[in-house]
Image 1 (cartoon, one colour):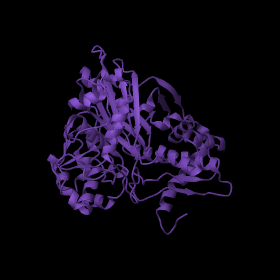
Image 2: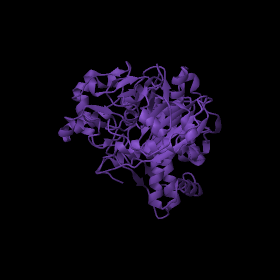
Image 3: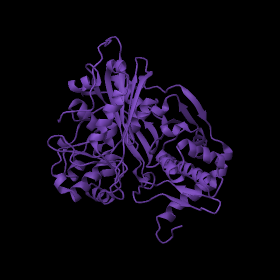
Image 4: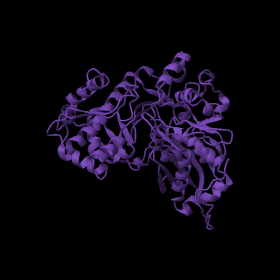
Length: 504
């Protein structure tokens, strides 16, 4: 490992050994977030640092792993020094699927290929041909977002890099390597590589071999609350900490679920972050690859989960800000509300980065349909937030086809700040949305709870309870009725925009 230089910091001298606190770090796509919980599970410190995404060419989405580490240091050091000094264990969460390729000296060989990168569609088809039992082993279709097809792409297009690969890590686990020197991962994040036997919770030799890899390229596997190593002394000094254990943690969605108590069979959440996810916890492995539903391990032992995944959600709101000149997302929601629900005929298909559930289509792109002379910024804004809601309905339908019944959804992520959007989503999905105090903190909260459970030796499900309810948004029948026709036109429109002979 090379020397680590984030920034200089003098460790605090008034260290109080009686205090016990727990740090959660979330390596997101747009930022790194760090939060600290006290003994009672109350958030007592937060820090954040931005990240940017590189898109060198069509379908590509990459980040520099060094940026994750730099942003992690910045986010952690933004927390009060006295709070940091009392941290006893750290949990990690992070964006899933990112292919971080390391050589002999543990240095990245190229930029990491991210979850929303769509270049490896041909490799997905090749992998499914090479491993006919793939769906049964992984419970998932081969999709370009997963890690395994990315390695096949590198083998085909960058063979000189592939030949030098000694380890493959996910984003949060690269940060773990920098923190502890250990090659380790958890079950929930590893399930998203497409190399895991998800029911058995172990690496699949058959799928690894089909990618020209073996178990030596993979990190050691742990359950989310297991300790994977200790914070290196030089990093502990840099961050102003003492002896600190680092636990496995979870993929961002699983950790976010743990943070809001979605840990028992039938619990479900809606994550409105860069992507949009409906997540349902299950006590059994229940795959539905035909519907492009993800079936992964949960970050708690003996639990699994299903997900419908939409590659663009709150990112569509950010995009709408740019094209309409809105100052921020709040202005988009204000303009939309002034225009009114279903105000115009405009339809927005939110496939800015392709789509997973239910289409498994990295090539599809977003579209506006049925614009007219009366279309203005308000109706554009309204169409965008409706379009994301309609895509979520498609995902819910795929989950229902897998036997999942959802009675309510806890809401997390930055999109949770808009009650107006919540009314539209609740009414289109026809389920209540439960908003929780601190729900926007997201995966970092779950990572900290897993660290807390590991330190205390407590069953994580007993600690991962829902935060207090802020408010509940119930479906409104008049909104449901008003948008029903547009929902059906939205569903029909997918077939029209992918048919080159019938583009509207």
